[in-house]
Image (cartoon, rainbow, N blue to C red; front, side, top):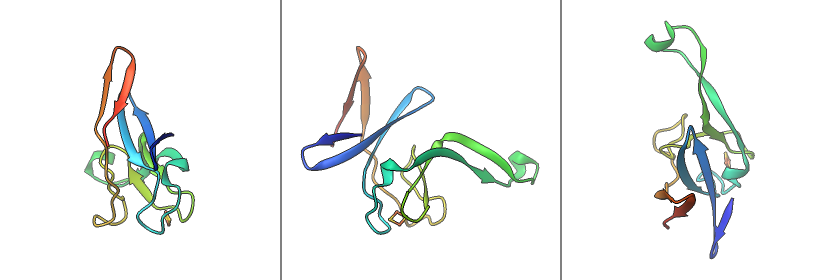
Length: 100
Ligand code: FES
């Protein structure tokens, strides 16, 4: 978590790719980035139509009411209309830069 002026931003490393999300949940303004980073369950042709644990490390769960968000896109897993913005992240010479 980093503070950029008045904005708190969560910076996540997902398999070596960096992503940044605002630390505010679009549901009821909870501290989204303080949530648990995990995977989720899915059932699809890719899992042979059985529930399976997928996308480990790509999902953050808001600590207030448990809505899951895709760290890589900012989209909620439960409602396509519920999303957080994402900020561009660049890595150069070991330095991570977030543009807001
Ligand atoms: S405030 Fe994040 S799920 Fe409700």
